[in-house]
Image (cartoon, rainbow, N blue to C red):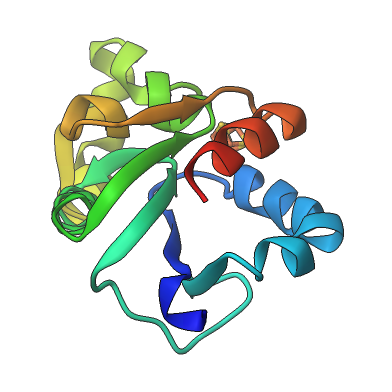
Length: 154
Ligand code: SF4
C-alpha cells in the first residue's frame, strides 16, 4: 500500500513564503488524511531530511529571481510528473517581481545587490521559467482552491 503513495515535494523560490505558511495551517486539518495517499518527501518548513528525486507532485511558491532559483526550478521540473504553481508569485510573478517595474534610478540603486546575489536581469514567474501543469491562485493561496486542486492529483 505504502509503495503506491504519491511522492510530494513543496518548494519555495524567492518570496516571503506566505503560501507555504498558509499551507502548514491547511496541513493542521488535512495532512493526516492526505498521508494515507501521499509521502511528503520535500518541505523545508517542516522537515529537514529531504530529496528531489522521482516526485509525482511538486508544488512551488515564489518567483525565479536568481540564477539559483532558475537551476532549482529546472531541476524540480525534471524530477516531477506534475508541477503546480502555488500562489500568485509562481503564476504571475507578482508581488515578488516588483523590481521589474522599477525605473532607471531605482535599478541603479539596487544594481550592486543584483550582481552580488546573482540575480537574473528580469524576475520571472515560475510559470515563465518552466511549464506548470496546474495553478493555485491567491496571495496567499486560496485554501479551498488548494484542497480542490491538490486532491485532483492524489
Ligand atoms: S503569492 Fe503572496 S503569499 Fe504567496 S509567496 Fe507570493 S507574496 Fe507570499
